[in-house]
Image (cartoon, rainbow, N blue to C red; front, side):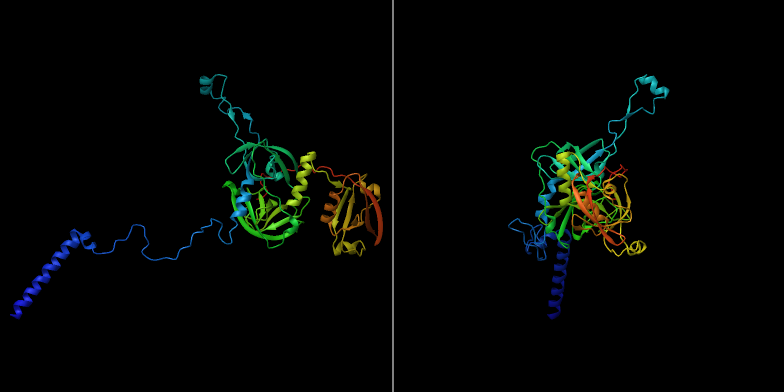
Length: 398
């Protein structure tokens, strides 16, 4: 009896397993009916996700508001040289071409040389600040806004000695940027650089103010740069350096680089300098600066010792332009200029900046050290002559 029961049980188990195998092979979905259905796209594992910002504002630590304010005011600049020039077709001497075209051979248009740079709209009236080297020598200038509009621009004026230029376009509803205040800027402040690097399109990079008042770099005649580690690359020239509120602090102009790309050392012309140059260009078409006609040189302990001078600061007058304002006032080579209009002079940069701000025709008292003795001279300021024209690359960032 027990043997018959085990035989029946074994046969039943064998039949059930056989049926299960057949169903699992041919109709596997039948086996899923008893399981809980999972909706398509629903996560199987519960993950901790970021809660959406219901208010719609920027995330904590974001500078999107500043970028949104400043980006529309930054434009791309395209320039061309000899864009309308046409050259003879190189096939003009081919007899087969002459058979089909006769003497009316098609001319070959010479493609313009394009330059990609940036600019900043500073006035709703259409004034745009950029670098002098971005538009220098250009026959045609076109600007492109972030809203897709394009327009031809004309050069109102430029200043090679600060590497600034002012353009003018005729468009309505231009988004002008707000000018910041340089006196409120401190080393360590967050800044954003906006421009068109390498022509990839408008780009925003972030960094801090690394230094203020950078000079003696040999980039421009008058230097007072903001240094930043925000990535600035070729194509950013003329673009905006803005603060965390989107206010303009400077015009990006150059980088220190051995590869052509950003190494974290970029320079921007301060907004105070840019504003002064822009207002002068708009009102008179150029920038007028004072000039006394001397060739200054920084004082060093070696120079002071060689001249038998005790002065540690000041600008050594290495040469005097014959017939110039300083020559007429009695300034001599070897003098050390220590003050201008009661303002102390520490080096050649301070001297150039101090003289440049004076109006031509004004009489100014200066103090020089001559053989270790103070001498007062009265100099009538002249007008600084324009600098000699020099060839510049389309983008000096590289």
